[in-house]
Structure formats: structure tokens, C-alpha cells
Amino acid sequence: MPVIARWLLNAVGLMVLPYILNGIRVDSFVAALIAALILGLANALIRPVILFFTLPLNVVTLGLFTFVVNGFMLWLVGLVVKGFHVDSFLSAVFGSILLSILSAVLPRLIR
Image 1: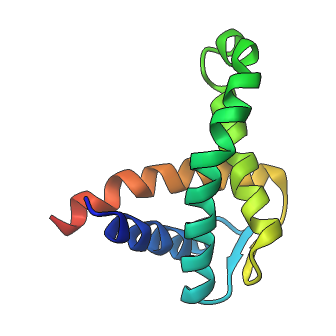
Image 2: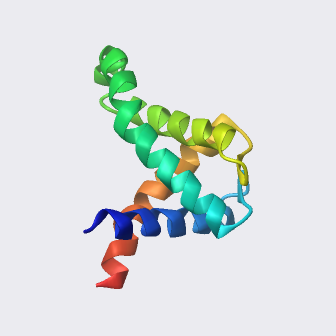
């Protein structure tokens, strides 16, 4: 799937999250586009470093700590992007789980 299509689908996923989860708010589609872009950059640049340093904890938890790292990335984007609000870290963790499910389902709905 082309990068721009994946970016747009992630933005749509971010727009759907507030309807499922109360702790996340998105003010506009532009804010969702910016948040999706920043989230993609954070996942490409920062997430591998954090996963490397938390590898022992990730091994002990059989990979479940990755959900915490993904939640941290979403929470971090909520701090940086205006118009995209994440109320708590727990909301970010649940939001990242839902976003990963949506990111897997949405491309299949388009085909």
C-alpha cells in the first residue's frame, strides 16, 4: 500500500478513536493528519530506540510491554500536536491497541 494511502487511513483511524474511547479527542481532520504524520515519524525514529532499551522487560512480559511503548508514542503525539488530545496514559495505551486494530481492519475494508 502506498505511503500516502496508509497515512490517510491512519488519520481516519485517529478520527474514529474518540467515538470508541472517551479519553482521546481529535478537533479536526487536519489535526488527525498531522497526528498521523508525527505518530508515523515517532514510530519510525523513536520507538526502535525505546524498544531496544526495554528489551529485557519486553522479554520478561512476553512482548506485552510493547503495548506500553505504543501507548507512550500515542501519548507523546498528544502532547505535541494541537487539536489531538490524550487525557491519560491509560487512554493512550488503550487507544494504541484500538488504533492498531483499526489499522489492520481499514485497508481490508477498502479492497
